[in-house]
Length: 265
Length: 352
Image 1 (cartoon, each protein chain N blue to C red):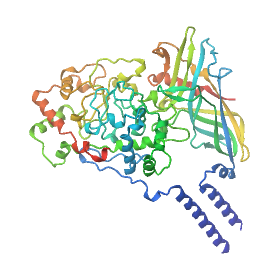
Image 2 (cartoon, chains in turn red, purple):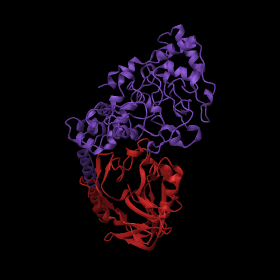
Image 3 (cartoon, chains in turn blue, brown):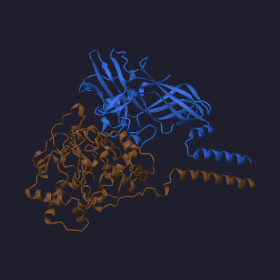
Image 4 (cartoon, chains in turn yellow, blue):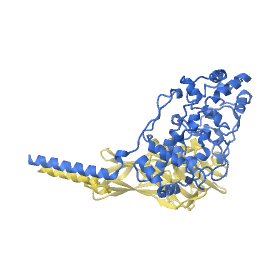
């Protein structure tokens, strides 16, 4: 009879999986899992990050921002015993942007999105998190291979990169004064070479049980994105400072800076 | 025993629930898309047709792609389709140097390339910056000087149409219409455009004979052109600087457009280099070069005769140019004309 119960339990689990409405969360809970929020807290140095606010860097330069957008992907959690759990289809667009007009006519609404919910994390004690900034080649090389939030509609692929198959991994735009007048800057990264993995050890382990989720806060210090970037003639394109597909070395430097900008509290 | 029978019953019940559910999900299961691989002529010099595992060709997928290809409603002003610049009668080109027929009326910076035998191209566009047809199609579709489409509006139009939902369902067994499926079906249609029935192909297959000037022209081709325009596809699918310009302007707003392949590879040898265009259907695809600067094949041959600009990235084969006698030139032109594929340009399967 004990076996019968097991089989019945298995059957109900099966029914849960097979039922046509997608009640996946309930099913997974039987096996012991919960949601985990990953919150990204943006700062400029010690200050909270807001669009349109003026920040002064340690070297005295000032910055004002009007757009910050980037993809994070391939989130993986590490248990205390070293086992890892890869979050399926984890492709998320983090953004803090004002309404903007694209290609002279489409309007993208303003949006702040700094928290992603990682679904169905198995119960356990986790001590580390890793994720990438950018999109891995399997998806980046074919814009019709979609997973998670990936799709070509978000002005984070073509448009200005029309001639180059890649998502735009990161965008950071605003104005800066390097001691003189305010000049616009537009920093973008993209292409497989810009994909960067970030591995973070949590200060305190977090516990996930079937009843309770948890939250991880990761900091991204925007000031660090400017490390070792010289606002000189090489950076100037036309009337603004530009990093983008035509300047691969600067794109690599900026990608490395993204990698170094994330820390965990 | 009793308990075993019970187990069996429960198992059957489980299987029953699973399959009934699957049936509901896809009623089309049995009549799904008919996948196929195009039959190739040996004269293409290719062992097989490269299928993409993640987007295999089906008759229904190609039909949907064709419908989209000829539909001007996808564009911003409802007047420009893919076929506006890729007209089958000109081997899917437009006869213009730099087209101004897009939605904005502004001239483009590159000449519309012909569309055929694309399945073998590892890089697309003149500089090879796009790496597959699936991704490429979003370029011309959304470029403000080409079709200028807002993909969200395109999806809205397709979802509300009386014909498209059934076409998508037949091609992809899917009730949802997404930009990914638009890209995949257009890729299937363009990948299926195969040109392999020119007079040259028939000659190589011993079906017809060429006349003397054509045969002598073939020899001129072999001696002078085949190192880049390799026989078979008549392109090596590689990138070369063929000496059009000595130096290349680089205005910031054009993102390295005049640097050729260099803006993709950042290798010095690729400065001013563009993908070797195929010689197949060349009589139909004037004007010539990535910017359509030469109106006739005679102008092209004049360039190779005495117009080659020497700089550090020049293809080594062209250091001294290519000088042909008058007879060699006329024989070569006779041979190039045998590469016109009338079967291809009149193929109803490729047309509206």
